[in-house]
Amino acid sequence: MGGENTEASGAIIDSHIHVIPPARTASLVRWIKRAFPEHPSREEITPEEMLAELRACGVVRAFNFVFPLKEEETASLNAFSRDIALRFPMLVPFGSMHVESPRKAEVAEYCLTELGLAGIKIHPYAQRFEVFCREFEPLFETLSRFGRPFVVHTGFDDFYNRTQDLDYLRSILDRYPEMPVVLVHSLFPRFGLALELLRLHPKVYLDMTNVPSSIRLYQRAPELFAGQQDATGLDGEAENFERLLSEWHQRIMFGTDHPVGMGSPEQIFTDLDSFEMTADARSNILYATATRFLHDECGID
Ligand SMILES: [Zn+2]
Image (cartoon, rainbow, N blue to C red; front, side, top):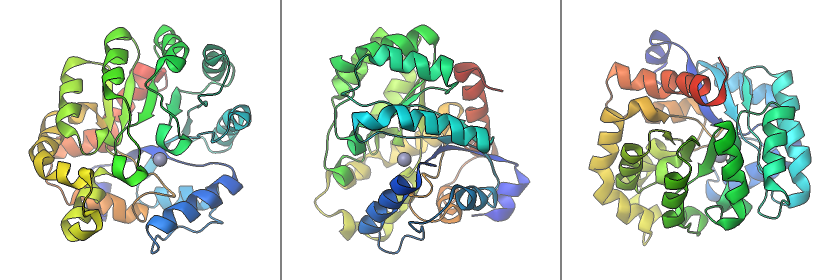
């Protein structure tokens, strides 16, 4: 991972992992192994093992994301998120909800105030619904009122064979300027749009999780991406990606997606380090932006 590098420049905050209940972990690992049969994770991986693997790479803190696949799972997953972070204080717990969750404002408020969760993460592609839509307005209103983050999966359309309403995303950003928004996966590969949204909205952050490894995978094995728009998009977005790394690192975080990222945590950090970056950019992306984000947008020090 550029082991020396990482140690020399200090600790890492991983902005994206999934410590979830064992049955959900097993099915998540089965899913990633269907896409990447060589993937090193095991269905039985425990939270202790996951966190030990991350610590071995220098990770001292990690944002933990749950996502209900059915509405009925929402309450228990949010409670799990709180409980697992009490057991492992290096975790920063986030809540979630489902499109079918009634009273989204109440669920969000309960997560923030009663469970002490840092914000709400939605994974509309894995959860199989649209989140940039009217049904979620009560969530945006609540997060805006509390000034707490809306963390949302964006991009990788071909991988999931889904799309999302990016015009509606723009209108959310226009209408809720007080709500911090983390664009997870940085709209991969629409980095030009990511740049534009960073410029327009001071509370937009990018999570670069899976992006460096995907670019390297595309360069190594373009045939895997044959006929996909994500890949065709990448050819025209290389320059924008470089600009993100060189000009916007104060608003960019990076995570592993462990245990279902693009390889072992060590491989994932190696892939990030294979891109040229200033020491300043690297320390922001791996640590300082997340520290500021936690302080400014989640009230966590
Ligand atoms: Zn993830």
